[in-house]
Image 1: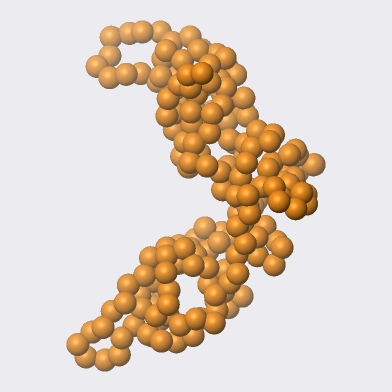
Image 2: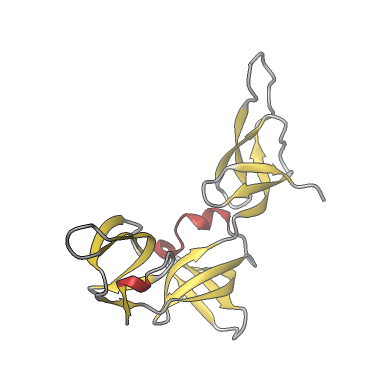
Length: 187
């Protein structure tokens, strides 16, 4: 148990049996009346963001979220199987929990899996990953004032936009948060 005065960004709260991450908070002390804490909370499971106001000093339940580094091993039916890097335990994670990061995961990719009561909540990848372009059309230069882009398919099957000079078989760096092309990988 903690009070609303102890809130920090990144904390996970258990409010009415639902887990919420604190995205932002502000302590407000008006000239008249009692102090309160205005928070922005994000639902851990659905991603919904809400604003909620608490009276200052009231008790809130802090959820214990264990963030473990794990290795993605393989798909087992619909589930993704991850292995804990320390205990070597294998954990199946449903596709709904993995979410959009599945587009950037290859076998043996290191990821952070957040667990609450041994149930996976979400999967995070590093900010960028290096993947190979499996298919793209040749770029046709034309007269344009800005650099052009073309669609490309990554080895994971995800589609991204890349500059015209990128060819099939090249390794590129991709932002895992929004799928942007970040650059070529030179080895």
